[in-house]
Length: 327
Image (cartoon, rainbow, N blue to C red; front, side, top):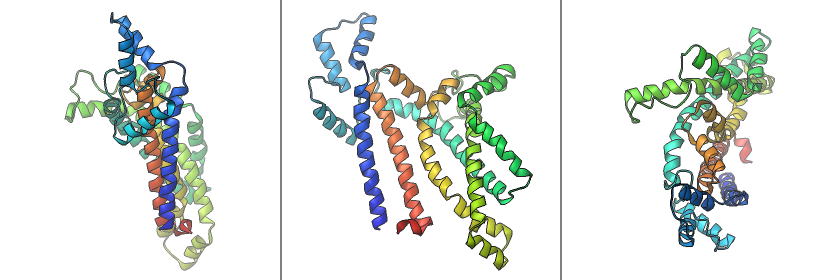
């Protein structure tokens, strides 16, 4: 019980530190979101006076008349109530609605592709490690080369070949804009069709690293005493591979997968820029370019909670799978 309480306390402190950095970092950036919004208002022919500026400061939570501590306490209070502010780049949409609209696209594409790459790479790594020295080992250098290829370069190659030259897949977007978004067959089919190339890019570029790591752990595990004892007992090969070798070899992969969940949100920026995909990564880039403090903080909050939550879950599961970590 002490192990679990210690882990929960650690992640609560980490969450508080992340929220504090989330508040401070955007305010260290040059520029003022209120000035940006007022400039947009002037371009549309609107009038700008001190009362208008004051109203925008209160609306966006960047009141310069308040101390930094007072703004920080107000920020924590709003977070506790689920109020993330108003987006400047998508004004006057609330940050929560902007994230709710774009996050499902990112989770569906990058999340499922990351899960598929982990399962594929881990499964192949177990098989290659079990049959080390065979012809399967010749696949490892090839997968390592694919992992070293810059992700955006691989994405551009796939777009040029399968999208532009062959015309098998669409070049840009997340769905056919002539369709009505919703839970219906044509829209879902179009979304899957548009997500094939981005998903393939993620799987091809990341599966190799999972394969190599699992293969090396599998080779190391096969030399352990408990595996040799299982061979001496005359157990079946499949049982030894799955329950003795693979079961222990994949433990680091589980921890790595929890860390990689941060890529589901943060790493989607490159994906969505190359394929013009309507996810949260493009919204993050839009927020940075427009000094949209509220939207940046909201997206960073989603990344923080996702990564910390995934790592906490893995740590708790580790305590059940491997009792030695509880000592």
